[in-house]
Image 1: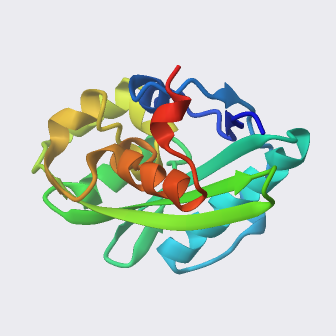
Image 2: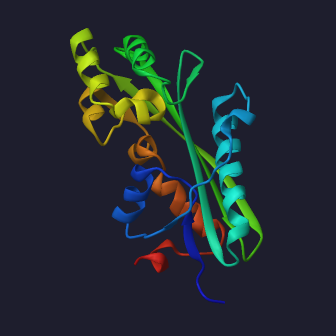
Length: 197
């Protein structure tokens, strides 16, 4: 059987860039799954369920593909944060995040449409945020960057200036864990280097 194609069930440019930087060139097929249907208070369970639903929405369109769905949230003091609704929420969130430590959860779902197998995993990275000023928060929110990000920051963008350190996988904070993805490919019987473009 020919090697399956890799399909990214996400509109996230950061996830696509991560895969491309690792030598993988996915077909992007945005999932239109309505995330508001899922109400789960455990962050690991939430991101895994959302990642799986996104992948399941896209998978029927492909007969020989590995369909990757991902979802990320930031949890601080047992409170789950996705993308902020508006600039005011982003400012309030950053006022809570500064000087704090959060856990960034990313759910990964990989569906092998030829083998009819599904793997679902979660990776967690601990994020230590800098003690930023109100003026820096206002300036950052004004760039618009945090409005498009789970956790209200982009590590690979301007938000990287406000992260003191990470414990765990750094690519996980950008949107998907490359080491975890390599392992998931192996668990399905594939060598990820065979997919290098």
